[in-house]
Length: 400
Image 1 (cartoon, helix red, strand yellow):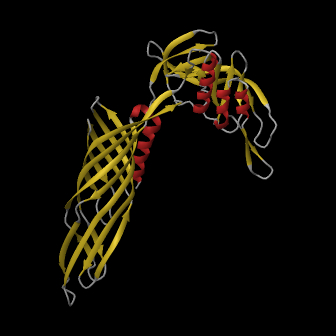
Image 2: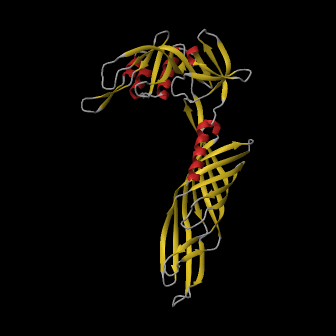
Image 3: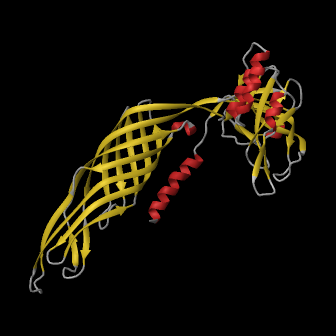
């Protein structure tokens, strides 16, 4: 069990320490000097305290954001601005405002309007800010209020704020169903920007996709059972090895994060062969010394959830390692001991499987080390061959 935990710990640690890549970008320092360089792209949920840059001589430097007023990498842009933020508590219907300099994530820029986002310091949720021409940047207020009856109500002040920005009746009619989300707010400000100018506004969002693979395959393994029978038998019974064949299917999800080097997958398998063996033993000290024993066990269904790490060798070739945990392993079993036991029963098991494989084009060959698969059965190695018969890309817009 300790070995299993170590394997899992190493696998999840590799996820956490995986490096994001440097991409082309720039930063502007407090003196207004713009420097183009490679910047380490990260999943920023709030204003960063520093950015990591790579110089032309491949030197890596952590740059304090106190010395930076703007930076951009991979269509992600941050600007340091003086902003007015609403800072009152949740049980206060009055409004309190704070005026300070902050790093804001830019979502949209036009000659007329700009939209920004920042994680709210009071509730750790996203707060949006809007700027009209050269006016001060103001928070679009969406506030959750706790009432005296311990219930909640929402003050959607942001709709009135946006109403004050535009004179277009067509645009204002959309405010009723406008949600406090980056997608809805971007679309609204994009619309009213186009009502006032001919050029399309610049939108700082990245188009990503979730790759979904559908695989179908076959597998083979050799299983051996051995267990101790109490009572009149009172000895260890060793059954023979037997080859088992089966079919399986897999649904794999590969996000764009971490350079698509990791995936989450669900796997389902069904054994086509039944493990079956029989043996005769003699106990001469008994009146009836001959015992005939029959044992059979069949895996009707198995399902797993797992994580996989890819190591890309070339466009069509990659290696992978994975760890998967059984959700369900269900068996029909039968045990017959002459004059002693005749029983049918169901076995449910959970285990951990460690595997390594090779992906070539759409073919996947893997070796799986299966631990504690069934009661009184030894660990075993499963050989699998799959074919990736369908790939789908589910496209979406991402802040990162």
